[in-house]
Image (cartoon, rainbow, N blue to C red; front, side, top):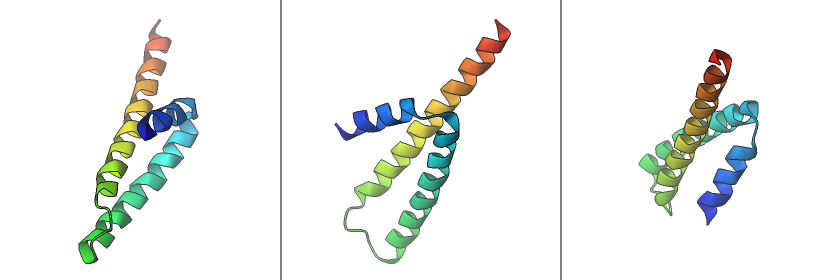
Length: 74
C-alpha cells in the first residue's frame, strides 16, 4: 500500500520537485549506508526501500524526458 501512495506522489510532482526529492533521497541513502556500516540499523530493509524509491524517481524523470523529446519531434 505504501508504494502506491509513493507512486501517486511521484506522478503528481513537478519535474523540479522530483529532482529535489531525488537529491535529498540520495543523500539520505548515503547516510543510511554509512550509519549501517558503523552501527547496524534497527531495520536494514529501509536501505532497500530507499534504493527502490530512488529508482522510482529516476524512472519517472526519465519517462518525462523521453516524452518531452518525443513531443518535440512530432
